[in-house]
Length: 434
Image 1 (cartoon, rainbow, N blue to C red):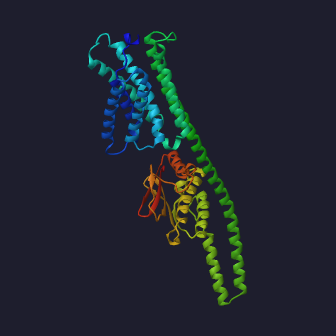
Image 2 (image 1 turned 60 degrees about the horizontal axis):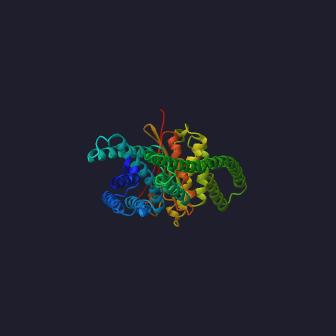
Image 3 (image 1 turned 60 degrees about the vertical axis):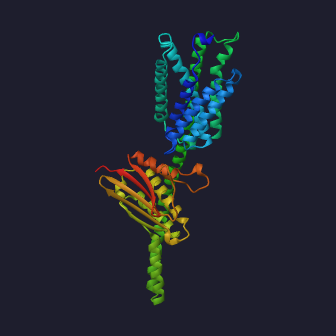
């Protein structure tokens, strides 16, 4: 019999493995203040539940396991700030990790210490706890070293279903040897059955993490594609701005000559006042902005025309020469996204007097500071340092600020946003070689 070679894993060791595994996965997602108390109470409940189901007949073993998994799910849900979908996904991972950890640690104890210290509970507890902490430390390292995923953005219902189905299949295959051990279809001797169980659970962990890695890479590819599209769109806008700016300047030049001719032919006061007004309007719509950076001049001049047409008061104090180190496409994307977000925000304000957008680019020490501000009548909610999108299709928006953040990282800079006193501010800081 299997018990003659390797005794069954005591239920309290299994409960400890399940409880500690939940801790590793919920640590980055824990609720504030009360979660440690809740977690300790759930751990006590896990321990009592394992002892309770251990007295059930063998026919109800699957039911008892299902109850323990359900308790793990409730522990994750009660101590973290995630929804049911994400909690289900984490529970599938935690269950397989706990199964592997409990089986592996118990095998190490039986192989190394069981014959020498058969009745010493301290050796058993110490050995199992050592392997638990080692394995959980490795899992924690992978969870934080490989990538930091916002699973609420990447997970879909089908991904959760696949993870749960994978966990069920791995669990069933890893334990089928115990059922076949009493038949003529046994996998081999009892020691081999335990070893196969541990190896299959380890393979299950690898499968789940490979699925997660593939999911994360797919998310990154979609995000990179969206950001590249933004870059390309803003570069094309820059080319169009440059062409239209030339045509506008030519038209203004012709109109000014026509005004001079009219002035020479007509000298009435009324006509003079009309022509003065016309000249003033033309000078306003000319709206050339000179910053010392030709690319930035074109973008800001075009944006200034847009603001005038939409009753937006746009103030601009820019030292464009500070940004001569940046690529053309990066300048187009950074200022295009920043000003588009600001103008879109103030256009939603019914009062035109509140449509205020400020842009400043200045030197601060050895850094170039870009500051874009717009008036916000309502309180703006920030999530993970970024504002919540107001658009209905949230899956395909929000990449504007992400592209700005990528540009900041590219030049070893930093991006930050603040929302206070009815002003939303975007700050981008670049180191400048002097």
